[in-house]
Image (cartoon, rainbow, N blue to C red):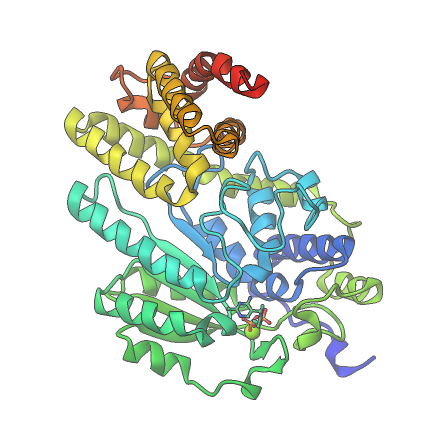
Amino acid sequence: MNAAAAPLPPPTNPKLRRLANALRALAMDAVEQAKSGHPGMPMGMADIAAVLWTQFLRFDPQMPDWPDRDRFILSNGHGSMLLYGLLHLTGYPDMTLEEIRRFRQVGSRTAGHPERGMASGIEVTTGPLGQGLGNSVGMALAERHLAAEFGDDLVDHRTYVFCGDGCLMEGISHEAMSLAGHLRLNKLIVFWDDNSISIDGPTDLAVSDDQIMRARAHGWNAERIDGMDHNAIAAAIRRAHSSDRPSLIACRTVIAYGAPTKAGTAAAHGNPLGAEEIKGARERLGWEYPPFVIPDDIREEWRAAGSRGAAVRQQWEQRLGAAPADKRAEFLRWIEHLEYSIYGLARENLILYLRVPPSQAQKLVAKKSERNYTAAKHDIQEKSLRHLEDAAEMYDMLSRSRPWATVQCFDAHSNELRLPEDIAQECMQAVRPVLDKWKKGT
Ligand SMILES: Cc1ncc(C[n+]2csc(CCOP(=O)(O)OP(=O)(O)O)c2C)c(N)n1
Ligand SMILES: [Mg+2]
């Protein structure tokens, strides 16, 4: 047996290690089945994810878009299976085991890199290294701005980020971290997967920055911990919570932790581990279950973590309900803008038809079509039609993932709470005749 395959040291918290091993197993198995993907990062950061998601992160899978949820951003998006595993195990309804099995397949929600809008719980599209980190600074800034505008009662959440060596190498991380430090965005907490390995081999092939000193120079609080030690992870998060600056937690990890020969090597960065290696990893991790099988006790633990946030969310809704009507309406208007402005045209159309009364919607569509006819450009007409269809499709996806859209419809036009599906249905009914007419080309 070679040295790398020596037994693993005992975990600081055996229960958390088992929760983390569920994430490791799903990542190994999904990548293996897809014959492509990145098993190394999820296996290295699984313990950090287990501590954060079961003990700290405020989220509610039943209401994924609840505005005051904590944000979790996977900037090292190549490790997407870590996020998909977390969403699946904590009970996000649209991240089924079937979706995990369909990792990286056309039409699945489980793209190679996370894409916002494809599954609830994906806050930001990531993959280009550094991008998530950049976005997270904007999100942490938005949180502070909203809190200043509407008060901590309505806005008081944290932004947690996972990033890799590659994210910190990217230029955007320098600009973004500089701004976060300058603005003292102390509710921004970044976990750096400090594994000394990147796509081509050891990181010292390409970078010599002292990232801790660099973060401090940006005005951050920064420290290094053992990213496999559950107590150290939790303690660092607590320190970050009381910091008056953004925090970088350098987590010493081992890429593909558990794999007998590939752990700690670039071979585990972006390739399936292979059957032998997976078998060895299962043995070393003490994970005796077949591929894609999660034992009931582990599933229950994860589900319990997923239910923690419902009460917090409900309390928040009560506070929102108790706020003066004009403040509430203004808050919802802002949130809608912030949440949805990044979704693109299809999403804008959706909002339009959710918010416009059916009669007006029909007029609007008719007007659009009139304009199209006047322009006599068939392609424009087609394009508009596609946008509407996109909107319908997007709506369907949203309603399946039960977005935080219920309250969003509050200020629509009747000043009463109505279900978005009802409103959308009315609108679609109203516009369908026009759509049909277009389709027939009359
Ligand atoms: C901007 C950008 N450049 C290059 C890539 C290609 N790429 C994907 S992962 C990766 C290496 C990332 O290394 P690290 O962050 O250390 O990830 P780890 O190997 O530790 O999982 C590279 C170069 C990318 N995704 N984005
Ligand atoms: Mg790395």
